[in-house]
Length: 241
Image (tube, rainbow, N blue to C red; front, side, top):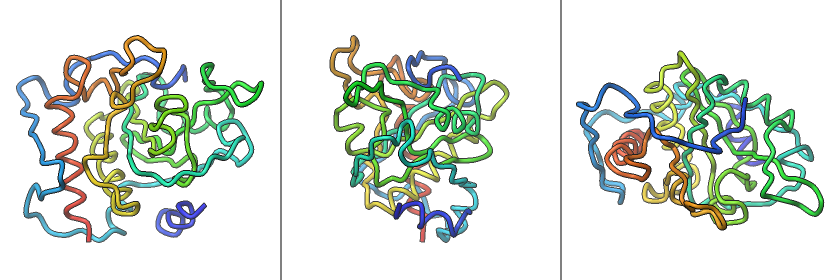
């Protein structure tokens, strides 16, 4: 619970991300330029430094944990995170709070994952929409969001971006970029280890690499849009005091 104790003083339905399909650029039109980024962590600009506390306030974090011992946290698997994995929900009816409630109710099952005779549940660390970011589990625990028993689950913090109808997708992306920068700072995770769900192949699936987050992929795989997103993350990271 170290991450929870770190966050609390400062801030405090359908199946999720099971099938991602391309729907076009996240903001603007195809005329918008998506810039590339040096994933070694080089600065993207000369804007002033921002205190960590201020960026926390901008993220608007709410901690709403799935109770320990229930659903996705029924089996606690310790983790020391080395990656951050970015997803999109492709659930057009649910915001972050509805996803949080679904996780706490055990509404999102993972039929491909079993602990003994029990069907496993999907769970990830954060859900972000255009108004709030919600934490569902400590970052010291493994989730079930990327690649079954693979390194994506064993080694990465999972962040889901909402895309419900009427929401501001650009605001969701910017909030996600800020949260990612904070997590990079906290866990000493380099930018090159901020990856899309696509990064983690899923054994037995065809295709093995999922088109996710679909609105940041180009033709189903990382390209200019993903590089643009990394540039936003890097900009916030470089500005953190």
